[in-house]
Image (cartoon, rainbow, N blue to C red):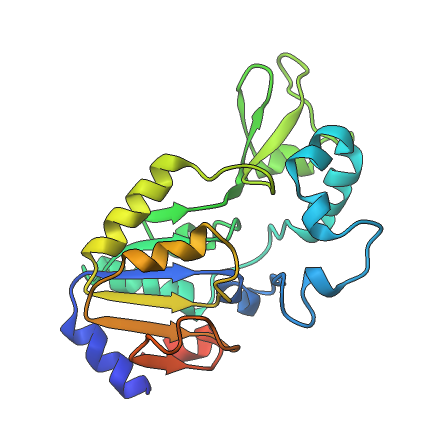
Amino acid sequence: MIEKLKAAIEECNYIVFFGGAGVSTESGIPDFRSTDGLYNQKYKYPPETIVSHSFFEYRTDEFYEFYKDKMIFPDAEPNAAHKKLAELEAQGKVKAVITQNIDGLHQKAGSKEVLELHGSVLRNYCKSCGKNFDLDYVMKSESLVPHCDECGGLVRPDVVLYEEGLDQSILARSIDHISKADMLIIGGTSLAVYPAAGLIDYFHGKHLVVINMAPTSRDTQADIVIKEKIGQVFAQL
């Protein structure tokens, strides 16, 4: 299957990558839905509840306790998948990386056209005055909950929480890229999170590739299905 994937990449000139948590697990960032993932660990509240808009608003201390402990990995480095995608973009093959991840590793690897459906932990802003802050500011905050150094307002991460809608401009750009693609590579995602997973419906190109350890709802539609770790697959390209 690796040889078939290599040949397909060689043949195509508008490749779009659509990735999820499995892309970053080989960088030491745990996913949500696997047996060892966050959703299968025991907490006072379910993780879906903790990373929701209403929980952030009403239990901000507990949100930040979980967020800083379980969702931020400042020392994580890009793996073979991130690096190969950046390389393929530099060659003019990959036109966009659409990611559900919030870790910024695609950009760290050198990818330029990265569409972050769920935002990024690297960006933060004051809810009162809108001032922007980097991750370092949040992590080095004297209090558990970071506040703006200008107006004292609450600083929140620029990530899409449960109960919040996705950025419509990011969605529109993602749809545009997918609809133009001659190859769509789906990697490291169970395709269980909507509306993000629904973007796949806009693909009408030649090669649909799925690289994921567990089965996905799109396996039967794909002409290449590889059930291996994505970093190991990309390292062979």
